[in-house]
Image (cartoon, rainbow, N blue to C red; front, side, top):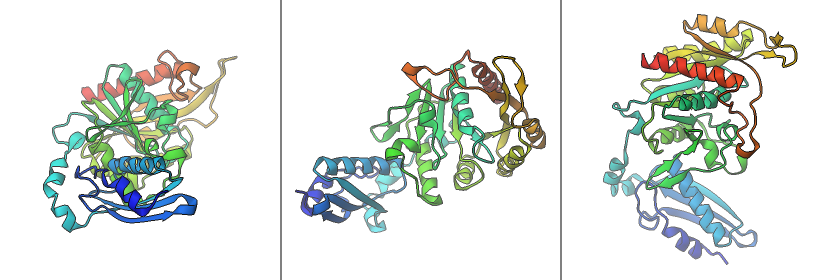
Length: 352
């Protein structure tokens, strides 16, 4: 039977992910409650930094340890260690600071994929552009920064989770693209109820605490609109290119212009516009039907004084049941070729 003493004993040997000291050494376990009849354990833990990928990793460790010892459910709360406690380990924290991808010497090109509204296929564009760049021989990473509406793992058919090696999280490699997503750290598709500052910390950890290695391109699938996460990306990245995704509908293009205007105001260069769902082409007659209207992409590109990189018709990928990735187009698929052409334009614009 689990008791408060047993829970403390089990958790004392786990380590603070930043200080690399045991929870016993840092006096981290602040509160333990055990409801014996329900086999429920509640724990409050103080660590050096909250709102990080490391916190989520420790959270998983704690849950696994306690469930392995007989708990049916676990409630966890995290807080930050007191300044007095942190002072004892200040040098360790300072050593842990690593600019990584955000270092001034880093040569990675950041490309944010943005849209004014949801439902225009921004994530579909993100995953297929990333894969197409990898097919050109580029070293590519992809951050699913749509933290509330993460979808990249499912779209790419990713079934594995990242692993921790040393003090770094190793992203999942799929189709030659290194991928990190909030979806990897959420159990059973649970909703995310964090507020803006916590989301910013999580996004920051994706830059600092993931072992990306050398990348030519890092793509960020942004949430739709101009909210907290989009603002955080613009403030974190001193230099970032942006691609705006819209549909042909005039209203969608009008709303997408806001995302473009935000990029311009933060001195991020707009690389171009991609028009998704441009038309439907009948397999029987070859006739094109412009089900969402015409001209939205061209109008948006003109308004933002940039290039229309490509127009993507409505068409489903060819699904491979043995290696299922529901949103990835094969290289020889009609849309796969369009994405390949867009990727070549992106490389040409970046490298010229």
